[in-house]
View 1 (spheres, rainbow, N blue to C red):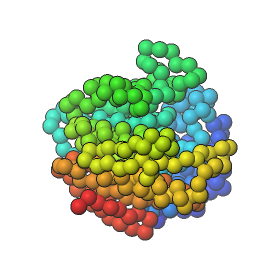
View 2 (tube, rainbow, N blue to C red):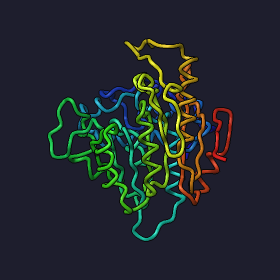
View 3 (tube, one colour):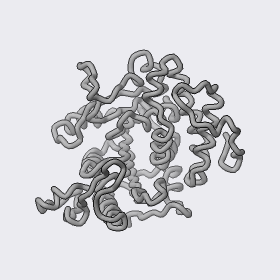
View 4 (cartoon, helix red, strand yellow):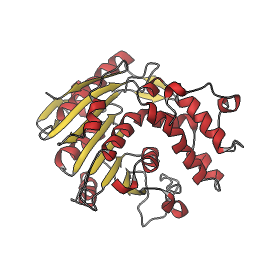
Length: 346
């Protein structure tokens, strides 16, 4: 496996930007992605994963060779690589967890990917993880169509998952329409997925506002969730502060006014408080989510990992595992370096 220190300057072909109509060979496509990923500062912290990712994304391209329209819709280089980089700490931890776990005969992991969007994270995990240890990946998002209904333009298209592609995924991908703001839908999801059929990995990347509260609650009240990963996104809106709400997570509570913030993006321009202010609120938000994670019989850690540069500040990652710990996971999580720092429960 090629590591970061083995990287060579990309060829002229590999420096060209790929498009859906590219006449590149799959080798040239993979070489371009490798050149792009190995320039990211995080590549030195996850060298094996960053070296492997281009070959995984190449498999997507090979899968959709006969459907250029689908590939054009699915693959936008900047979006896909950004999704990979921001999920890389979780992908690395999940791979270490799965490979390092021993089960009773017939027992396997289920991965639940909350607010998954098109499912890039689960698509990567399907190509990367050993199928002998993972039963399925459940892609949860309110944007999917119900299984008994024909999708419309208002839904996330699942054509890259189902139909003739369904059996080609090494680990099954299944979509699940769930609005995480609706308690009844969450409870129905818990009955379906957290039911003693095996350990669950619950992963949540880019959860907006109070959806992060829902994710922490799911870990706290479902002992079947063996491993938990959360990367919060935007802050809760001011509506909660105006209502004088107090947020409760397990035995921890905090005033919504301490974490709620107004502001929004308008045509790629931020309309709201200065970034220094929002950064402080965001870090306080992540701290409270971490404190709300139930650590009775579990290990947990919050790490700042610089996946966003050029002024981005959404670099807080929360991890938790119900005991016993998986040594291969926690040796890495507890290891600090130049672009990561961690806070662990006492």
